[in-house]
Image (cartoon, rainbow, N blue to C red; front, side):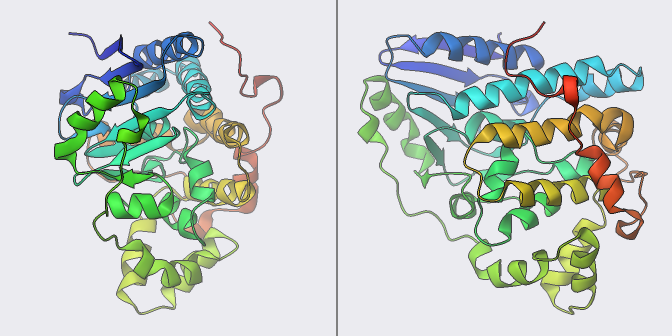
Length: 343
């Protein structure tokens, strides 16, 4: 059974992720397969691209990072860097694709799944949808172009979502800009059938379930306007609300270096409308993440040993300096993210 089903049906180029037991996590071969067909379909006689997934638990819970862990343990920096380089190039191609790209995102859509599902023209969520950028919890920054969406969120919601990795239901995902509209999942197959017939007007959005973020916006803006991660932490410490206590607890579980860099990336991208500057900044961090950051330790604690007790390079937020952040986000020179395909 293939991990991905790629075909043309009627007027639609169809991509179906098919690893339900692995929550449809992206492998490197899946990334290359999607990119190849996206290139082909730019000039093909189709009206739209449709991306969906098998199973009810997840559209795509992220990238399959076990191989990155093994290569990092062996001090092989090449594999991860090549994976990210090729994945980010695919993210840019989806964002810039000249035809409608329709995604149906049930269940978990996280990390790499956001890069596949959240850059198209029609991003559909349903009752089970849970969208998040949880990378700071494993020592990485929100990537795959997700930082651009975070930078476009209302107020300082992007900083909050990026640093905490908060999961969004359908209503919140639409509010934050990760999705375009809600359709009840029982109706998805009918909509897909009409899309295959070439009827893009089959996408009729419905009223989504109420979210939580709008009611939290004032608290988020007050605290996450802080200029630095340390300032945000101090503001939360001075607040006795449940929001502050829960948020502070979450931040103290995540990697300080990743959070500090996430904050800077979102701030630098505010007002940006193109994805490539976002991917370039993300790649600067990812390129260095295995050798100079907390990524391997984050995977170990969350995925391999599952002890949830990472030993971060910076034990506390107060240990992080602006120089630490700047070094991770410096330009890469000849190693910078390139947009042509490499071997």
